[in-house]
Length: 168
Image (cartoon, rainbow, N blue to C red; front, side, top):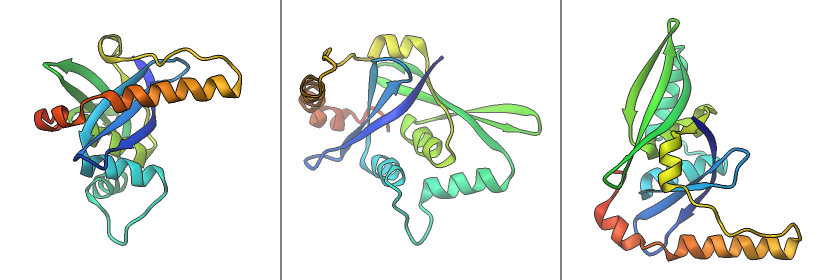
């Protein structure tokens, strides 16, 4: 498995689709996963330290996991079939591990709340991972490389993905 972390959540003002960018730890590849706006907001707001007066759905699930004295061991983006990403949530309880199917967006929203490791199956990263354009170590070149990656993400057809709704 390839360990990854959430590099960013891109919010589209023109559609209900968002994209979460996973980056392989210690590597260059990124895995863009298109998700619905509520799940994107749930990830984005938590990563930015925003809190609501009452728990949102992912907060409730995280509270249940914590209060029941089980632990979220990891989440795994484990498959990509017919344009849909699949995930597993792995929970440990009573000395055993239990694995549950989940949408990647929900699994990621739980992972950020419970500070759980995120993994991507190698075959998923090989198939859908992208490497942004190479850049030099100078700040000007680094900025240029990041701009190219931003342009790549912006070039993806969010409207087409919204219609297909790959993660729902």
